Image 1: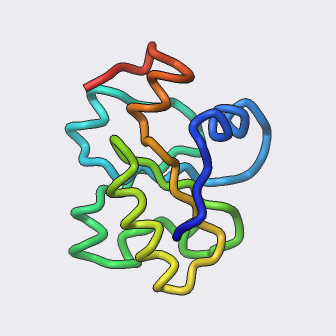
Image 2: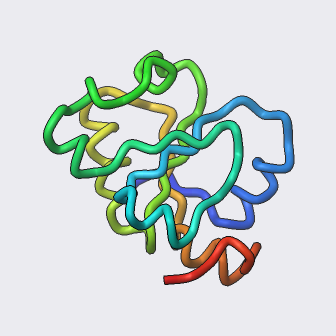
Length: 114
């Protein structure tokens, strides 16, 4: 069992000034179809993580100083990445349950569906 947040929790965090990282692990082609626009968004595709490991992550994620919310299409890849990060010693990472698809359905349909 991995720590998770709901898409409505994420929406509230996005409205706040809270410091966190929204780590989108989808492939670049997926971002063209649906994307949350926020300065805290960082994109590191899961395929890149598989090739490069922790080195693929930004310094801000590697520092482990602020929460990291991991996002993908439906929440499956992000759950895998959240678990992998936990195995690497990360303690402040959370899966975004339902992914960007659920976010678009429940919070903001203008970001798009695919």
